[in-house]
Image (spheres, rainbow, N blue to C red):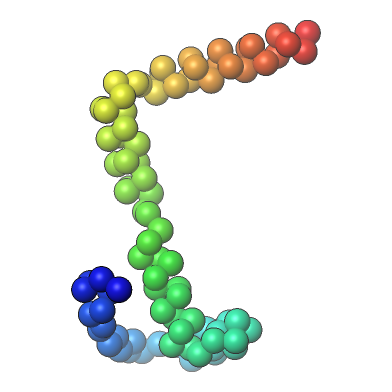
Length: 89
């Protein structure tokens, strides 16, 4: 376990609507987890899933690295499609 993973933080959720707690508790129970374990899974998954802005930034970074443009990608896809279609004619 890395040093960053060893550090823990306690969170307090204020003003959580009752229906949200009921739903989360039911989902935790369905997975045979405590509410705490279930919420840790949910928060961990959220923290490791890239946002759309992060994905787009990665794409932009790849474009700069490869020198390819969107038009290049579209042309490549069209070429592959045309080749595949020609095989079936």
